[in-house]
Image 1 (cartoon, helix red, strand yellow):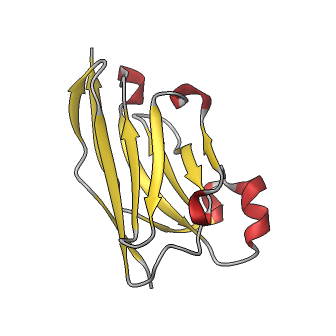
Image 2: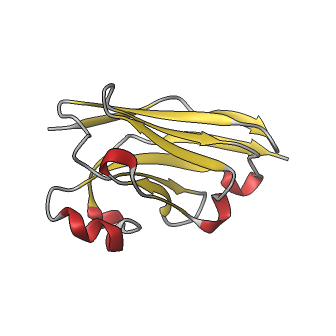
Length: 130
């Protein structure tokens, strides 16, 4: 049974930076696709970024491209999200997620879907003020 624990988020002003970390315990992440999602006030949970096992392929939602960077360290079972030039619309609770067991080939088509993931962190608040 894997457990995902996210680092504390924070509050910054527009243009600021934050880095989130997600540490897995109980089972390693090296064989799994990983992702970050977020849920803003009154909104549904949305995909932010995903990375395949080994880090060979990465995807981002358009609104964070060239500002956010997802990375993974399989030796320490850590997923990271570096966020730069933050905007008020980035305010949300951020969640890390690990893909469910199964055919890895479909991850390339399903990485944006919340039901592709079987393990979630507890969520961490990121607030960006203007």
